[in-house]
Image (tube, rainbow over all chains, first blue to last red; front, side):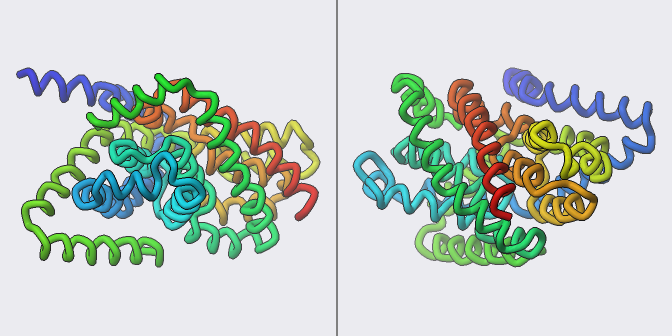
Length: 180
Length: 160
């Protein structure tokens, strides 16, 4: 019963949203069906891209020792850590929300907070597979202009955030990551 | 399946096989951790997907095109940024849509803002982000990225 209650508590938001979605479909059938289509499309995308991301996350967690991660991306990793975070984020595939669980593993492995923010920033804007797609749709000039502004942008945002978020708040996040 | 997904699967498969050869026990542990991390965030993922579905059914390209035409100026940039911040569209849908919007009369500056906030700001995914990054960092990151998108829009408007 205890675990059932816990599970119910975690899924209650989802249940409410599904009921609201059902009401929406009944009220506006045409828009509702369109929304249902988009939802299934995104669901398919999630089921396609998410499993390998989580398996990689599990393998990283089990096989890469904390010391190694600290050496390459932790405090004192300097420029090496920043570049690595930028490259790892840019090599990614999948939506931004796939990056958050990886960030949690990085926290557990002692990766520096600003490097995690660089990783998140790169995942959101400089993904290489997406860049090719952007060039094809919007042209090279658009894509490269955006890339050239976004790379310093990511670094600046990571710098500002890691300087303004209080140390005890960051410590709390790292503690919290142990349970995620 | 696009090429990046295939590469992702190939890399995962190779690493998983190496892991299996080296230690079955550790591999099992890794898969258990993967499942736990996934199940932990699953309800939030599903909520995000449903909300995005509803939003996209309401905000179709035609409507967006009207809002962010090339003569819509900074107000159009602001609206484009807001639409981009709220919606979460996968890149392979977003870029062709943006190209359509350009053809439909949207301006480069507005599209620059739209693409930038689309990628960097995620209003719908804020609950997921808070779970990992806490309220302070999440709100600060999204706010700064939103403001930064105007700079992106401005430069793209000048250059492209």
